[in-house]
Length: 295
Image (cartoon, rainbow, N blue to C red; front, side):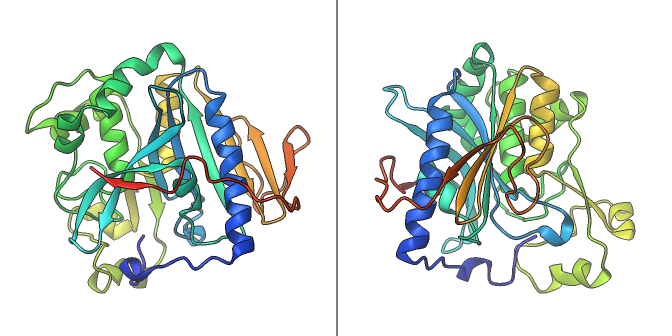
């Protein structure tokens, strides 16, 4: 699911695009600030995976700072200069702006019930387990039940497993997390590749691999991969009281939609959605910054 230019991608934004994205990020920040709990699952539309019917490509876990000054998102990123995955913390503005398309973007928040977040927050901020859950090798299309590779969303779901399964630290933590996910009926997304040429892409794209997937998956071109949609479905299954908010912009307006059904493609608001115009000339402050801190 990565492009051949993955490590060369840069986002050159005009002043107008940056201003609109910061306004969009301010709405996301506002929604997080209104959360009762202190941890949320946050996903964004990053790489364009529309050909696979996928809106969201990248998930993270956001947490409220102890002093209530804002939120940060902890996530797995592939460090191109090092050639390996790393864990990074990022402000919500930076996370929101990390999209390929500055004229159309989506953010999804799953707000977890407040009384359930303590074990998750403890695990998320535990440097030992955070690193023990990090694989040494990255694959954008990593098979969800293999230890060979890992993608950004797989790290998140394994951390959820470690927290919800109350798994203690240890060198085999990833294996135990995957065992717990199987027992909890976690279902990774079934990605229909639909083309032998795309399946052969792993020969040319360095961050896409097929050697971890079962032979049947390769023959049917149906890959089981952790994606934000599968993480959200699992969170809803495990914690039915969770609430979902989807926020999008089309460069002209921001739409805030509450509920588990998706906003219509193109960021088209529904009858009960909140709509915020992006035509105000006043610039928006960055506030929580674009910090990107390696862990």
